[in-house]
Image 1: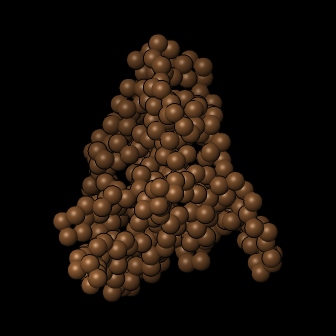
Image 2 (image 1 turned 90 degrees about the horizontal axis):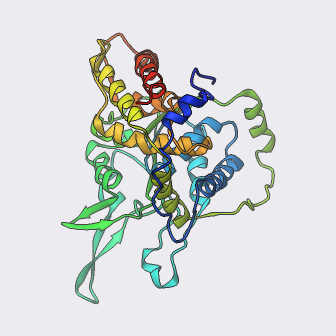
Length: 361
């Protein structure tokens, strides 16, 4: 969708770019060395997902931004929309590059957990098991110990189980019997919930929703893509021969994006002004959190990288503001279209951003 800030004029782009005197921090000794290298890594992951999921390019891009932005994704989808296939393709795109000496750190690339009302927190995080031979307890890892975790129908289990994910998503660790176990740096959650069937569900509290970088509302795919799914279903497919992406490449890419994509003070002011305007709007009962603004920065940096820039521009904010903010807000009764509220509120802060940037602020 074209916006007023697509292809910003040269003076605006120059004002938002990093000052020439400031050089980015040194790149990691291994892995990607430039943003062009990072884009190549991201495109390899995108190719894996597109090879397995048809008609979902917009969703794939947001998942890609969340992965390299070190966030998590909540998919509000219809049954049979391809969410498991998408998550599985993402997991299959990643290879574990731990050395043989680090075998104890190796994890499955992908795990899927079906949330049900009788699920227990230990079914996700793991449990202490008694070993009669040694006469001691040892920790048995749960499915949460993976690089990509698909949490299917997250709102069908109790709040007690839902809360088991809070520490993992925020701090990349779990605590069992007063012992903290670290998750991998790559740890990435894709959770799903069905918007059509509310029977037997437990709505996610705002504290849980706030852990997700994006909430993505999936719609049925286009007619041509759906026909292609039917044409290819059941046929023997050649195994995917695309090159995989090493776990370390993604972790290093995240670091390089933070170091090399400049976020101007004007962009930071714009985000704060948007948040404050949303909180003050009469249609909003509860506005967005400060955490959402913090999580928005790496997401905006990642989008700028994918667009071939080393600075965040107004078009990046306009593109991501709805998936970042829509699930963190509560509207007054009678107001249901959160996207419309957000789009109306951001106009003034974005105009101010453009004017301040052109003035050299």
